[in-house]
Length: 158
Image (cartoon, rainbow, N blue to C red; front, side, top):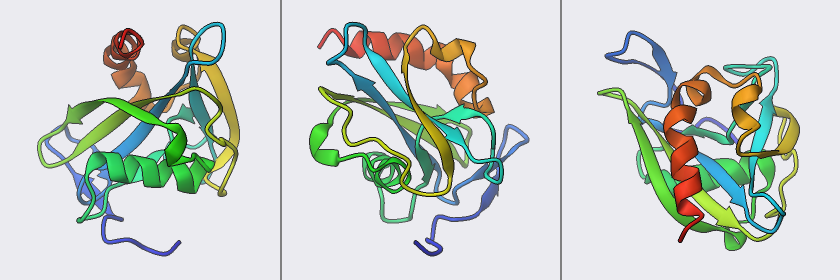
């Protein structure tokens, strides 16, 4: 896993620096085989951007990738997620002008092989949808959770 053409910082219209020259994408995985649906989170390693916070697996998109491809690649690299276990339901875009973060919402009927697959995470957690907002979240996830939570619930209906 070396440098990719999407690796790099972007200064955007919101006044912040974001990782991903072509934007970024992450996976919001909803597990449906439990009594209450759960979502997969990773505790970011201290040395990473947003270290010590709970986040979705994700990262920079490469120039040739769409959001789904990038989110699934990152989820596999960081958490061993098996693409064959997923059904993509929705894409939510947090658009900042020259940069955006796309959250791919997908469902699985099992744990999709989730485990710590590289040093970017120190822990994984299946969390109830209502518990997510009580955790120490990565700033980007914290900001978008208010929009993601109802979408997560809505995707359960179909």
